[in-house]
Amino acid sequence: MGRTKQTPRRTSLCHRHTPRISIGPTRSIPLSIFQSIVREMFGTSKLGMSKKALMTLYEATELYMIELFKDSNLRVLNSNPPRITLRIQDLQLAYRIRNG
Image (cartoon, rainbow, N blue to C red; front, side, top):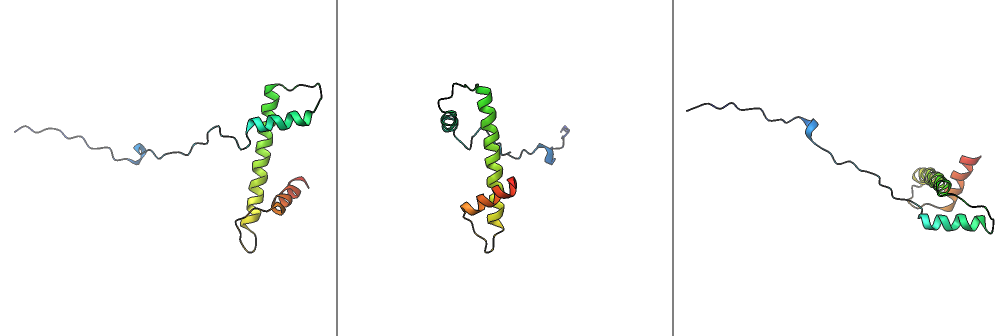
């Protein structure tokens, strides 16, 4: 009987793949609604807005709103007694703290 060479199995943890949570291109504010609000704010002005300028304004607005909601959420989590509902007072307080 011949003897065969056995190779050791790889059992290191580096080959295990843990699934990553990826944040896709989902938007918090629908782009079509944001565009209509910006058009309404411009009114009958003859000024136009390029697509790049609109997207820059859109991303800045979305980032600001997300940060405002994060700050408001901290207020809710640290309230006494603890609660799970976000109130308008929480948003107002976060806005006042941010903008002085």
